[in-house]
Image 1 (spheres, rainbow, N blue to C red):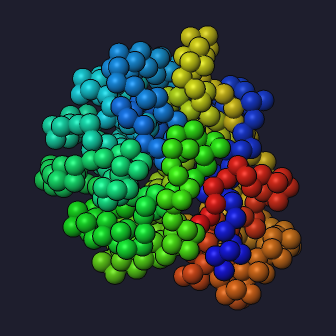
Image 2: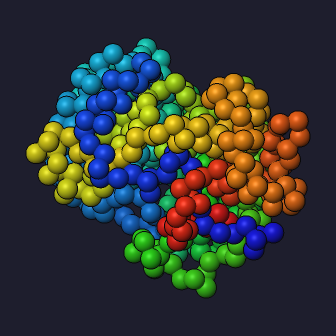
Image 3: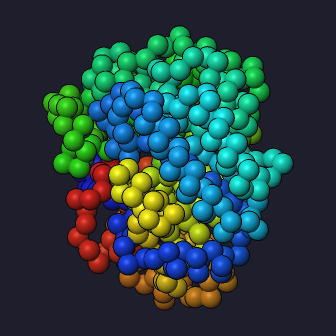
Length: 446
């Protein structure tokens, strides 16, 4: 089964995926999408690209430096983009904000407070919302939490990846375990409403046995949410990954065992398995929304507030506005040049056609809820599911034969084992994936 389904495929943080973005997409396309959008709520994503050290596994858009003045320069350009973009969203209320990277806490406390003040001065923030930031525990003091609280953040995500020292050394990410525990304890004491821990399985020297020890330490931390990512080893695309030796990598069988073991450990401890790489306590908003059939998925992964448009600000960030996706310049120098010349940094994007919108609904339903009612899709989208997706349903037959999917009374249900292969199942409905042999551009599913 592992050999059969261990092929490459997208993670479906969007449909169509970013591979379909095109530089023919213009600023006018984006303005039209904003004008026609039915939403009045906004989620902001702020990309801070800087990291003090290079983690060998990382495929994120980043700039490795210890020169703080580079962040000052970046904030100057980012501020120009914020001031230019904000008036387009004056009728929106910001109910979500997330800072990712890179390492957002690379910024000094003064830089963080200056930037958040500028954002709040230019956008309309709701009285209550989800305001989160990614934290690297290696390069900060505990007092950074005081700064984040003052800036208005109420959720933090701490990058741990693995507690095993041998693994940390192999990926150039050594960290103080006790500091992570102190950081988590202080965050809870200060009233941060949600804490998330990021882990990665499939790193060099990991085994199901060593990762089980890391999972026990994570349970001691008792976070509200966990993101347990499948390491995507793509050394041809990411130069730093070439420092990771193939002979140190766990096998696909070991990786799947780590995921299976993680799901059993966390669900046994009371967490709800949201899907793919997310877990949450049953009283967490993610878990509640999944049970209510209202979970959302975007470029931050599984998330809440489906009704929000998403505006990405900063280098490489991606927006999802109405029926379009738009991405900023991916590299920092072209980003600066674009801001100077245009006042914005739009690089490429795509406008969804009717078929894209239909398939996006189906893929999101499956990846968020692992079940689909064809009658409800018919009513919502004005189609006959079996007719419209005749070819797609044929592709699902192999999953049905392997008891990963069941279709009874026009209900598609993904089995517990099938949930581990939800990306593969969603690929059945991906028209672009079928039309183009692009498997080499994605990471393997297992």
